[in-house]
Image 1 (spheres, helix red, strand yellow):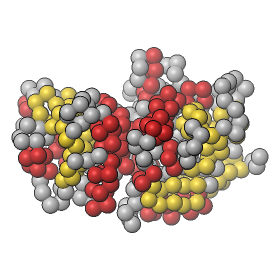
Image 2: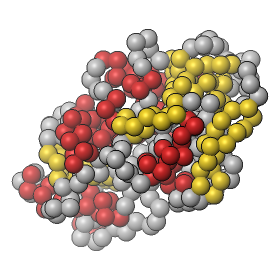
Image 3: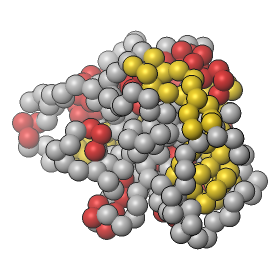
Image 4: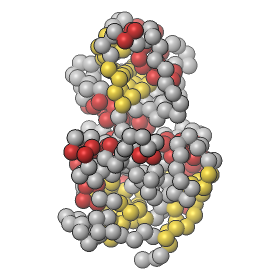
Length: 358
């Protein structure tokens, strides 16, 4: 094995470069995986723009598909050479948060800023997946073998995008026959749309203005697509629901405007399921909140992680109930990752997700 590897390194706001780093040493509970495919997330763009702070010199990325290169001395139940994924969130499984059932919050601590929120470590507090090799902590809690017959691109959305989008639908507790509005049809919003359909929603309203994303929303299960650039989405959604409002609104962009609109379209007692990463304070308008008397629920979700979550998502893919391969619109070699960032950050050429292959 070589001593050095290529990696996408955060230098400063506005600069993520392809550089070189030592291949990490493997501790007793760790696993080293050789990355075969990864991708760029919208959160990585927040890092690039300086909207989410990380340390200079950090390797970015949190969506790994790869092959086990080396196992720690205490890791059992896996083999070197095995194809695996690991979730973007890597719980230890032994923390207070995990024991409470909140695996995504494993490792987080109040009062220590964003960097301590939840169990997001890859590309946040430790080196991430946009590299030739990735060190996976707590390997026995996080490595999920890829079933035979599934390609890298079939499982590429499982570590984050699919898990987060489905998580938004699950947090909203969608029921059979529900009406659901999903604000923004980026990759996470599209997976939330698919999750709403799988959970039994029968009126699914996607809010999106980009034609390619609107078409993909219908492919993922949307019954209606509201173009917010041509009409007031709140008025249109109320019209579609005969002024009843939706049972669940999913906010998948992270802006005041979409959050407020999601709140305004809820029926009394409805749930706003928030998936957005917000970079400034949110305000709750008095009328939209019904002066605090509307029995509304607002719930936030951090991408569920861990090997059992990954196994379940890959079962959805294996069953044929959802094909996320169409979300991969562009492909780049790791050597060209700076070009990939330029394309993805400017949302050019109809990009949804990019596949990065070392």
